[in-house]
Image (cartoon, rainbow, N blue to C red; front, side, top):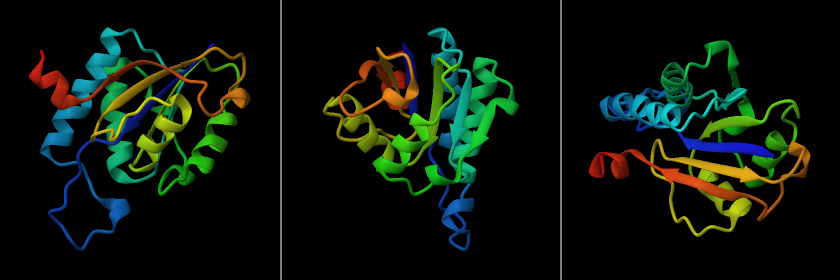
Length: 167
């Protein structure tokens, strides 16, 4: 069995319009929400073997804040250039190349790809994964290479606004 957790990066700042999109940091809400979602993952005993992240500053910062809450060393965060501005096919290729010794992997990226990938893998009608939204999927397969359209089963879908409105 394989467990894939897709996370959309936390809310980013648009204060400095001179920054390249790749360099935008988290805003106050993003800095609040990423640890909140990390705490959720910790309470659910999610202990990933690896965290794959877009190299964009807002995604890496999200990965670091979440990893602190779930007790995953920063060295287990791997930046993957193709997650930034990814398509379903490029994300699928990344996922299918994950080491088979890893049972649980978190992938942190951007919309629309994170929402589209969730729909592709699960056929679950989620219209939009909000910033810092977390979708945990289970796959009843022995290797990552076997992950394919419609094979995922959603274990949970959480996001900060839902948690803050229903503590």
